[in-house]
Image (cartoon, rainbow, N blue to C red; front, side, top):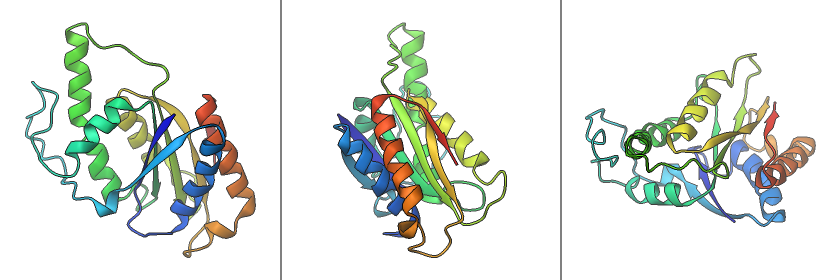
Length: 197
């Protein structure tokens, strides 16, 4: 089973990536085959709110997001990982999510024609790490991801959240959370919803 994995952190080998790698061990254990895409290596422009996709379901902006649309449409499992920046996902991850507006319009147009088919196997998962421990530190990011996955025509299958790791390398030392993340990866492929924080 192919799994698209989007890394939203601008920092390579950071805490969210360490957590993602642990989760992907579980994904692989259950037969998942991850394709990892590092968003900070791509040139994805922000949505310009031009309305170009309203009638076609296709984005008019030509950049590195363009080939990702077909990948998203053709996969049943997506994971996005992002650290928390000011109570939200990173700018790189947010630009990616904003550009799924074209997929939302694609779904709307297909629904209007009676050609849209909901596939309960299509599911999205969110991984996040926050340095601080505020009670609502993940709330905004989760809402963004829920609506982002809905735009992609996917069900939101849950999240794996860790608060506290601050310095680069902190997450890699947390063996308990890494083991829990691995189990969450297994559950995601098995179709079991998760909510861990």
